[in-house]
Amino acid sequence: MLDDTIAAIATPLGEGGLAVVRISGPQALTVADKSFLPLGKNSRKPSVASSHTIQYGKIVRRNPGAPASGRSVEAQNEDARRQGCRRSQVGVEDFQIVDEVLLAVLRAPRTFTREDTVEITCHGGILPAKLVLDTLLENGARLAEPGEFTRRAFLNGRIDLAQAEAVADLIHSRTELALAAANEQLAGKLSHRINQLRDELMRTLAHVEAHIDFPDEDIAPDTKAQLLRRLENGVKFMDELLRTANEGQILRRGIRAAIVGRPNVGKSSLLNQLLGRDRAIVSPIPGTTRDTIEETANIRGLPVVFIDTAGLREARDEIEAEGVRRSRESLAKAEFILHVLDASEPLTGADGSYFAEFTEKKRILVLNKTDLSRKLVLPEKVGCDVLIAPRRATESPPYPQIVDVSCLSGQGIEALKDAIKELVWSGEIRAEMLQVMINSRHQDALNRARAAAQRAADALRADATLELVAMDLRIAVNAVGEIVGKTATEDLLDSIFSQFCIGK
Image 1 (cartoon, rainbow, N blue to C red):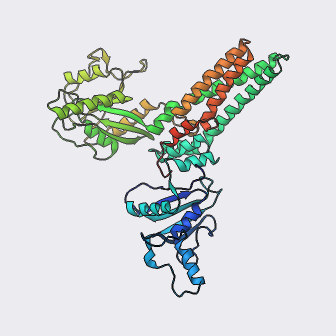
Image 2: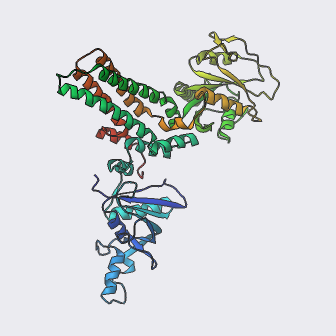
Image 3: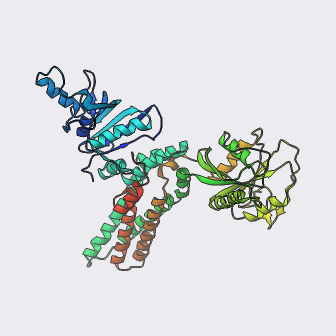
């Protein structure tokens, strides 16, 4: 696979000022030579240009029916000049100009993939980039698979597997905190700690296997205590990393919040206020929202996916019934809910049914329309003995918070954002926390490693046969190694890199 030369468009498809097409592999410079016509006295063919330089010229491709040569148009014209021809033997009609470009030559090993790489900057738009890519494919490159450039960077030792995942996190970052966490992981902060943990487990395994090889020598009490201390420290460190899993997943994928309430209490208006733009249609007519609307907002550095739901009332037609069904489906997936009430109207039976229906969900009560005369009175209990009074210091969750807002004026929206942040992530978000936030794959590997390390420690304390201790230590070492790719399988690599876009 690494013997191939791959090419792909590295920028999103669509209209834009510029697009970038990337080539990587042993024949990258040869493919570029066949496709690129240098212009101007200082511009060079890619194969003779210095590394990390930019050349100006045009991408050209042979017209159908023109005689094939397998050599670049520039090389063929040079041959013609050497033979004393006044005009090039390669007619202009044999080639068509694809685009005027800037071509960056990046020679191995000082590249992202540690292979010869060429990056062509052409005009933006679907057609120019596609034609440039087609030209490269005609001249010997093949289309890259999803994530193949990053996979080559991993296979060639440029980055480890945790850093490769950070590339995807960086691309998909939706807040500055998520971007900072991805940059810390890409810089190798998590990998450094994982490698330290693996080295400690390997050192312990080496001691145990040495005693297996020399059974006549018993493990001295002080040596046994030292081995147990290493294992206990390793388990403690894994516990610290595992505690970052929830926060890490929140930063990477966001947390889902469903906005619920009876029709016409201001759910769509609240969504627009939280997003800072008009996304949902707002109307005084009940039932305007007939489908779920999902949008992501940056709430105090955290990506929160807000879901505006249709009112859960008895449907008047099939379309509204489908909207109610989708609302219930979204509510089942949401981590918490914003329960919107109309502060300008008395509490209704429909409001009480919402309290009763979503007792298991974390929630914030949002009292909207507080700019109008207040008529809402919250009793201590509604429906199925669900407390809705404000949280007191002596109480514990899940008693909800209550926030007054006016979606018309925007009053109270900042206080609501604070309440959301505290509900999702209690405490301060410190810079050092961002360095080691693990993802779900890391969490699974660490859970397996922790369980194996704990079994090894228990067996060592119980003076069990050392073969059992060594077996569990090998399991722990391999599980930890999966995180940085030292013990990764082909299936695991396929699963990770298939989630990347084709040009990355």
